[in-house]
Amino acid sequence: MTIKAYHSLSERVLNEVLNLENVCLDYDNLKGSLFLDPSLNFDQTINSFHLCYEKGELISMISMFIPTRQEAEISAYTLPKFRENGYFKALLANAVEELRKFEIPDILFVCEKPSISGKKVLAALNAEYEHTEYFMRFNKSRYAARDTYRLLWRKAELKDLEKTITTSMRIFDDSYEDAKSLLEKCFESETREQHLVVLNDEIVGIGSANIEGEDVSIFGLGLIPEYRGQGYGNELLHLIIDDLLQRGRTDLTIEVNSENANALGLYQKTGFYIEVAYEYYRKKVC
Image (cartoon, rainbow, N blue to C red; front, side):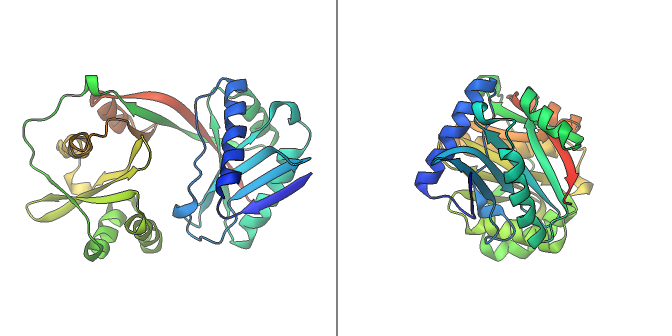
């Protein structure tokens, strides 16, 4: 057994990981996909990919998404014929050592809801179920555009950074450091776009999109508290969809916590349907 750790993946290693993922998805009849972009991790030097090889073949891997210092989201796959042989256990121990170096206190294991093998591993780890998130996909045929808008939607510029940070803190209850780190990475990215929602010259919300490949992922949508419950959320979602459709982008995705009934209902009414359900399980870094 050989374990290797990386903070980013070369094209060769990325192809190995994607091949491993595809084999596991087919075997377990799952639909999800790994998040393999480390650019949003709060520290770019952290080794967020841990790979296990046997005789030169990639047989098991862990990917960690760590946007803040509070927790690391862990996803993992092991080739079916190598399961229950300690490979994932060894990889997890290696990943935990990396998390200790950066004083990250919690792990959130991500497990696709139908995954029997995944839930078996999490039960053995005594990880506690926390919540479920839905990965949703847009169906254009079920979308009805609005006729009028009260809100304006404009792309944020670097000069808007501090105002955007303040707005994000009010919406998501982030710390200044976490909001600044995430938004700076968005501004620096070649594929992510940060937008502002404006009403009467006041910034009342934000929204983002990652435009990479065929899929466009919508994320970070929100309104400051005093503008919620007045129909502005519906306008906000329509604004970003209209903007993307006008640019010829129809393969849109969004994620939502299953307990957020208002957002889930809004997304469904606006043309999104649930494609994959991910369960999240929490465990302290020992």
